Amino acid sequence: MMSTLKNSVRLVGNLGMDPEVKNFDNNRKLVKLALATSESYKNDKGEKVTETNWHNIVIWGAQAKFAEDMLKKGDEVAIDGKLASRSYVDKDGNKRYVTEVVANEFLKMNGKRA
Image (tube, rainbow, N blue to C red; front, side):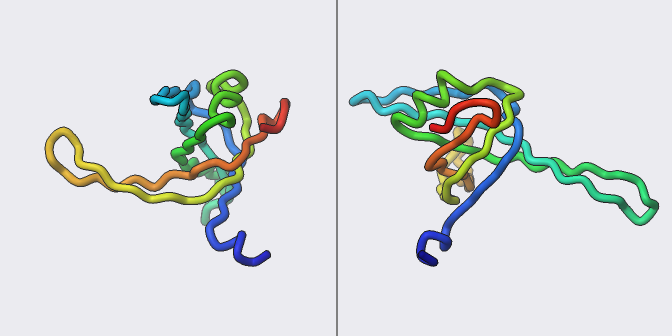
């Protein structure tokens, strides 16, 4: 049981964009999402402060097809997945690092589980 908790991420937030869809050979599909999570707290002066974090979400395969069909900018979505890090070289030759959440499943908060 504990082995499944080693790399586990659960987020609930709102989509900041429509799904970005990429199709590959042999009918593989990838959907990228930008998910905003917000937390509110009171600062030293008692003022309410809201902090927003953006998360890069990737969804593959059949789940990606559901995401493409079901999700749109502004939707509230719960994501269950794992963290993955990768690097690439940009057009200027600089090495860039990216951390993403690879979704195992998602739930549109007013809709169906995929």
